[in-house]
Length: 400
Image (cartoon, rainbow, N blue to C red; front, side, top):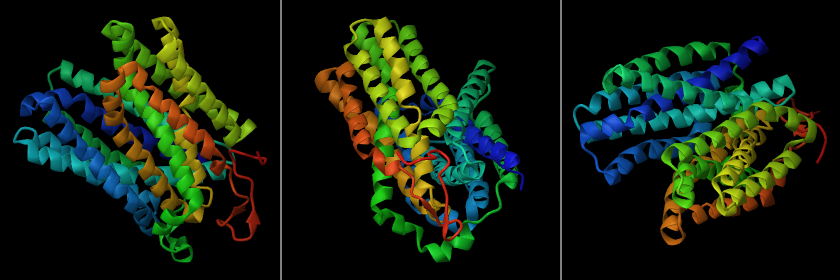
């Protein structure tokens, strides 16, 4: 299979994953109104996605090892599409079918996420240079496209049911088509030699990488969920300026993911991530204590840049040994998504006590934790993809 075609296929599944999620997210206000949900009830309904993801991810390593990344994504795309259809049609009936649909959507997306990161790492290793952050930038591109499509559907008065049915059909066809160009499946042929992927939960290095990704996901998620609100509350900014500050954060993070691989290839994972961690802390400090909105905006740019590479590079580090990648990525992704799940309510609790702006300092503490364990991302020398062969991991060509 052509490596260039496999690379394009991985981009495609990352983009499709982001596209599916953003299309659903764009219709949340209409679903809320159709079901007449209070904010608290809506939050509980939306929790079904996170629950589905967090339940599916710990088992995703077993699934990917058994079926391979391509077949896993093809199957999980159908599960996610079924979830979208169930939620889209169900919102015309009542809350229960929406919850069931969102649970299926989250479960499908969770396992899909692990599988596409395993394949992305395999492509990265074949290329011999860093590319995983660009795949994650592709996810961001998909979310932007999905949000724009969703806005267009709302503007022309397409119902949520029809909109989500169309998106589900696209995902169900496009994802299985894209994975035909994946690298030749090799996960299942190593499964017996590697033992159960669940053993990854007992590996100290894997767990340390998971802690790092937990910290990175918490830092990223705090910016996504709370930066606009904190800017408005802390600096009395207009809503439009709060949204613009958030947009600056996202733009910086996307640019960091697109251009970051060249820095990773030159300086290695650990040095790059430590420099970015310091950048994120500096940005957070400017947002919280900058004293003016323009300074806070500059801080948002630094924060976004500093948060850009932690999650994707953590996935690469978990996949250093291709034979064990599925189980390890499952562990690391699960811990990362726990952070995405736990972060917003924790910041909200702190905001009630200290104010929204000061509550953001919790993310700084998580960055410090990430810096402490970042050495775990340094690649090992031995690859079990080819027994007995020493290789240099693509994102860090010399020990650091």
